[in-house]
Image (tube, rainbow, N blue to C red; front, side):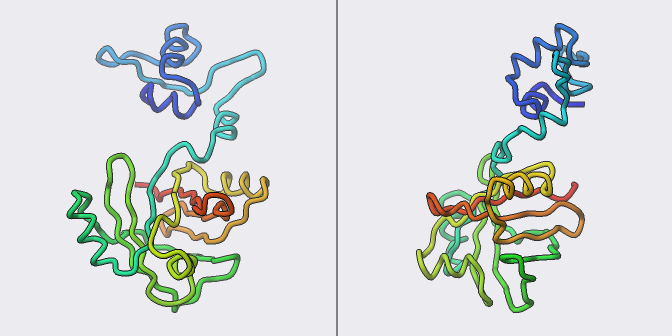
Length: 204
């Protein structure tokens, strides 16, 4: 069961269009306390339109999840951003396995400090390279502190990764969450200097 807003995002149409389709009976739904809820996604067109086709065509960059800033001193950065009213910052709670950087397993000596805070509808993530060779360390050494990547939430990390690889983009860093889901960073920094990450969070 989905709200009109959720259905519109999944079907890549407007909320007004969803309500019209509900009223016409072309989408299965019902009213709860005077508000429409969608019971089944997708509606019939002459060409056999369905929800799987919608998911395939939906842009993987529709829902931004977080911005990542690389810093030299994470404690000072946390103090600074909290003085601006952003925070509290907390360590990430995800256990990650099968980490690969440029297709090679990440060695145990690679360590980074990470703190995350909610900032409106998205998260702000601070990264401080500690040891080992990482893209964050290279970014800090060559460009200084700044936004290193943007992350976008997806429903299926494998499907969306395959779609970007088909377009010629390469995975520069990837991993799996122990409880499900995973992430992949791509070499989108050729223009604009910002890496794009896709992330499928583990089930709640």
